[in-house]
Image (cartoon, rainbow, N blue to C red; front, side, top):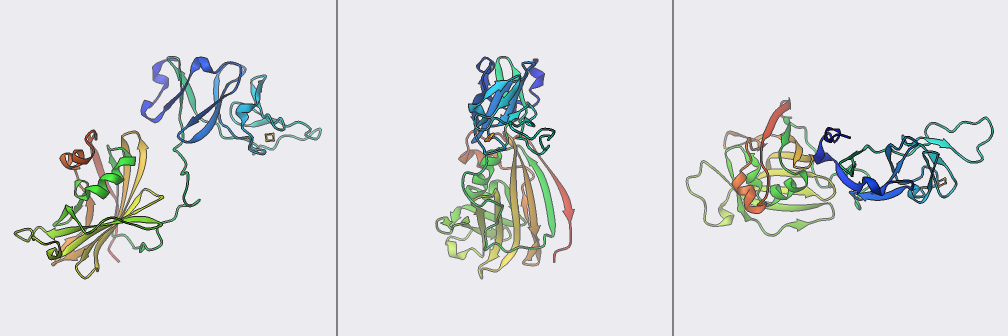
Length: 306
Ligand code: FES
């Protein structure tokens, strides 16, 4: 197979040598999930989730019979598409129901290696369904933005938490990354931080933290790639708010989704945004090998603040 068969190398994982998959099923683990590799009757490589649809026995402990894989437990057989094609002792004249199947995974061979298009690693712990931290206040967004960011999704949340001003822009307000208010507070659902913030209109920076009239609060959900961001006055009242979610797309690339509730401060509009160009110097000061190549931003929705 030609190299071009591997469409986007960054989204594939090399999981085995081609020579390692011959007449027997081969078990592999990739991104925390288990798969079985085998060859069908035409010697084409196949990959299935390594779990029988019947009682979840590992198919990799079974055998290959006529190009299909047979479960070691009760003998159900699956073809390369994951469809169950035979069940021992099925009543005569009965057909295997169509929904009896296991998931097939895209797999290719190139230059002696096997590439698997692995789904993302499932969370090893945490809630079984997506759930925002209970103390987050829902809001009707006045703006929504979707942006492609040339930065690894699994690192972007760290950067936003450690150095918010590298990626975030808050109207005419300066975020003071090096002036956090206390240590991060860890709760069951989130990790919460607070930074001093100052209107650019003030001529000089205050010398004492308590002198800063604004603060930026970040609450990063523990089990989801989403952070609640708020700019608050010294009375603790929220002036502007945003929820920023990150989808890791491929290695080095993620999509940022931002829902904002804009406000005002001192008669001026106040909104939370992603910088048109991330501050590479700042990012590299905490992630020295960060690759920041390009960013596209496109407002996809705009509505009047509620
Ligand atoms: S567990 Fe596979 S056939 Fe029963």
